[in-house]
Length: 231
Image 1 (cartoon, rainbow, N blue to C red):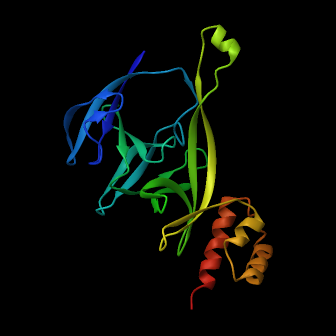
Image 2: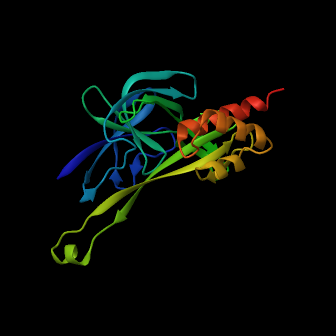
Image 3: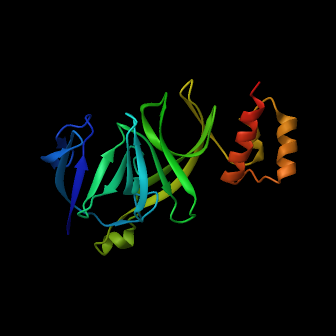
């Protein structure tokens, strides 16, 4: 079976894709839109952060925004997202000119922000989910890795497949230095990245019964720590 994909190039990509020649179709907001066909392999799982379409808002680097557009975050790359057009076509958008994405998580119903994070190991940036954003940020990198899970018995039967395996990595982001440092969850690990206010933080944790294995409680503690830095 063949599936048709639309690919939106944002300046950095040529009109030749790795899988073959792309024919430009039209111009959308000054950007080239192309189309190509690809035979789909036998793949289990999903390359997306969430499988369902979620209406959200895209904020661009020039300050403009696109609202009410169905979005899927492609987490097998962190440099692309899918948008759904009125005619039902899915368009893959590179994040070159994107600043942030605002949406509601269809599973938790919480407000979620993905931002393009530029750091020393990736100066062009990658999409990460924001847990806390202040003088520093705590972010989550969602990674869907495509792995070959073919077994000997499957191969003998002529059946092979690949599968997307999901994981989440957490990090401390220091925007002034463009530094991204991997961290773990838990009280000991979180207190380590919030130095110099141990007693105040311990008191706040106890008073508010925070569980620092939970993202929302980490965000509360980070906000409190930021407030202690103000003169």
